[in-house]
Image (tube, rainbow, N blue to C red; front, top):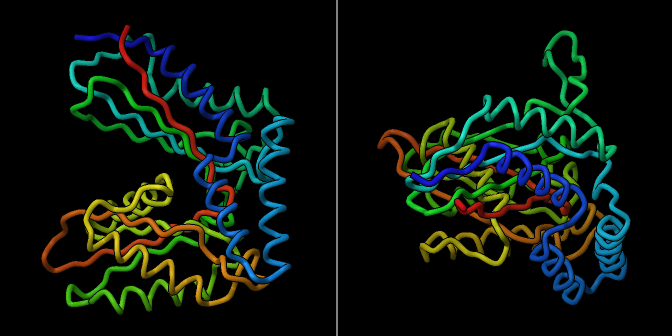
Length: 285
């Protein structure tokens, strides 16, 4: 067995949380720069330049990329033969770290304890949404993602008829873009989950939404569908911040999984132009 101390995990997660809060990923910056070159609308181009300027200021002055400092997602993938040396509950220690990091870095805390009645702030932006799985890798992979409330509210789950085809899915996603994309600060990143179950497909959409924009789905059919949806969405002319232009979305990412023969689950996950994430690998000493 290869041992990794639990404090090593929490400290690395702290670094990633800070990085995600202040540093827009390079692939997103590159996508925005490419969008500037393609825009014919002066106003759209200026908005995209402001997004780049915002990212530059956030990185240099260590200021949050957005006033909504997001709900925290933490994914832990544990490789084979890796043992976590415990001195407490991993989830409890991660949540403690999240609260300390939000307080010490003056990040806005947005999580409420009771969703329906009291709506009282937990005062630490906790609990984080923590997901753990196991892989065949020889290391532990850690990923921290942040998602604001505006884009979180533009999330959809559909249980479609199994006979639903590609064209119908494109029309459905296009209608949702027209209905709500202006509520989540376009240009957006569209994450789509297909298959699994009603609960699993939303996780797939989240994974897709936080995937590096340089990577297409390795299955050529789904990779082509990603391109088709992106092109159709950008043909709407909604543009940056909904004020017109060619760049309504920076990317469309799809993740899929096997599903029951009587079902076709579909989930859509919009991420704003400040889709924040950071990840790293922890190898045993």
